[in-house]
Length: 306
Image 1 (tube, one colour):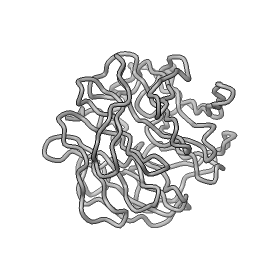
Image 2 (cartoon, rainbow, N blue to C red; image 1 turned 180 degrees about the horizontal axis):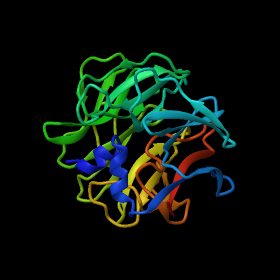
Image 3 (cartoon, rainbow, N blue to C red; image 1 turned 90 degrees about the vertical axis):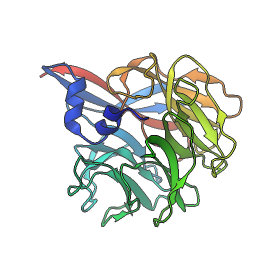
């Protein structure tokens, strides 16, 4: 079962403080990684906590969440303001765009529901009045099908966290995984052939993939680390993953030593992209490739004295 504190940390900002030493403050640094140069470029650094960059489908800006709101940042680091999401004001770090760039999906709590539990909403990419998709909670969005017809998400039903899908207009909740242990982070490849996800079914968190109907699950990583959140590039040939250097079992906490790696989706070879850094929850939870597939965005963290 998914670690309870991990789930709640998506929703309750005050739980972050439990992971930060007394008298320290979080510094968040937004980077863009260039695959060709193999280098990361810092575009924004602030003494506050923000998370989970998405890259807009037109390539012009990044979307981050902070304090329950979604904010736009230009690819040069200029702050472009808060996106209007109507009644959705408790957004967590599970959000992202449809492949055509017209719709934004947001996981968020509702003020009238105790515990800030997470539902999935959709809204125009330009902002506006949101529509609730999932009736059950918690539900954590992670991906959308290339044809824009289905969302895939992580949810606890029958006392186990599994991968589900649902039509973007709501309806039947379709369960795609049934194994014991956490299945999380589902995301479609751009060619629509697979859903990539991370799973604890082997006794260690590893990357897996399956057909869009849940058939033929296949393990993709096999090392001693905890591997989370495979984000396939637009080419569907490689994916970024975030790797915890030490085994975190079924949790993906903030404030650990992590590195970003590239997974070859044909050979299953894994190569390091970054050195180890202070990160984890919030670093790269959601799709963050640019439209060309030669850059992606992520967040590093540090601690400063208050």
